[in-house]
Length: 324
Length: 249
Image 1 (cartoon, chains in turn brown, blue):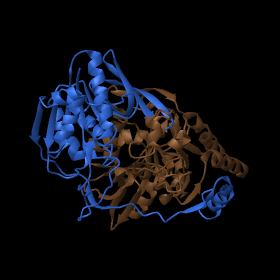
Image 2 (image 1 turned 45 degrees about the vertical axis):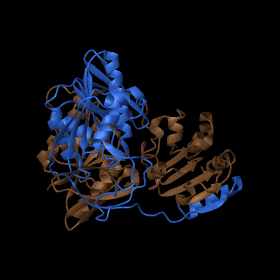
Image 3 (image 1 turned 60 degrees about the vertical axis):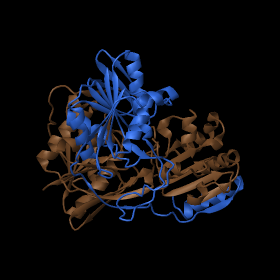
Image 4 (image 1 turned 90 degrees about the horizontal axis):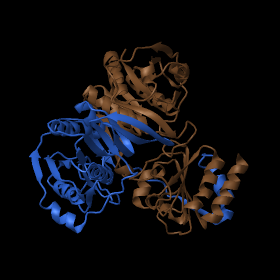
């Protein structure tokens, strides 16, 4: 049976949590098309040890390509091995996470297979045996519905959109030998900073974003405290404060930064320029804290507090800690 | 050091986007178009490399309608040496057909580096850079914030979740650049004047098929929110609403 290919992302020898969302998305497509979910992981020796748990989210078969050569990520090496696997197994749909690795890798895999690619999908629909994907464009000012005339359909899913759903399967673990030809042209030599624990603004379920209203880069400390009180939150930033050099670009939310879909988004001292709203409007719940009652951010926030953020935020941090 | 930079003309990030009548494209009326902001980083990176090497050329290539010539002139004004416009009447072509047309053009040229912006801020696909690299069979890295060339290979810093990673690539290679070490320069008056005399070659290209955009829709309207209160005293009520109404705590 042709399978729905779900890419299992591993970095530094660890399977990343976003892989559960990819398997969940693949499960929904597989159910619609009457196919199986084939989860595929590449990595060094031992990478298969953690892969078995993916059956809990609906993987029918889990393919483990463990080879020392794949310990460190190589975009061209991985693309070659995955494209060979997809061809051999006749996968009909290929799903990557729209993570840093997925976004690097998926276009190369698609081009190698001679098919197009749809990035950062936020919904996958099967109607009459045909897959359609919904994806944001213009950083969320428009949503496009895309069809895939060629097979396989290659796409990536935006983190935090397909919440992992338990759908226990047998999930037999199988090994395969990933195709490899010669040396890799690009290879990761070193992972700087960053760790499994560090929450990225694109993947965190809670995002605490600050803008010019913070007045000084050092004042972001109060947002870090609030994020710390949640435990699973990341700090985000508006373009204005990134352009001013207060925060790194990796935290920027908006059209020239990241587009995020957390369960809970705090816009603190952010007026709500159109390019920022585009980057966070798909959050499940938006809270705005701003001293200007006419700030455009209040028009799209679910809940707003008008007031001095230097008074409101510490109080909020205290209350969240108390819930702890 | 011969560097090719692929650039795109896109609506400004502050533009309001309206749909055309057919609902499969956007209405360009009144929209200001600019050089894609991520491509500015790529152009800056190319110019820095050329300056550091003390020799070589920077060629900018764009695929699009006739107005893309303006975008290329902007890149020339920043300091690129020559430009190529692959002219097409196709509206919003998809990633693969664009990548094939670009690879067809670039494959016949001599280059050490091909640079792209991380993504175009119109279709948000981040597809073309990696696809062109695959079609040309050269290594690539995306989301690069800074890179250096040492002894015939490239060391690039890539933005990843919660940090960065160092990628080593052999030359020639393709890099997609994001915001980082390359703050784009403004075209000087002298640069703008010089750009008018720099070579800009135009070629017609015909594109193949890719994924089909069935329709475009505006985002779902968010239900009107409410002001919970003023100042820190509103916090307990906010917490209650987040727990009991929104159920996100």
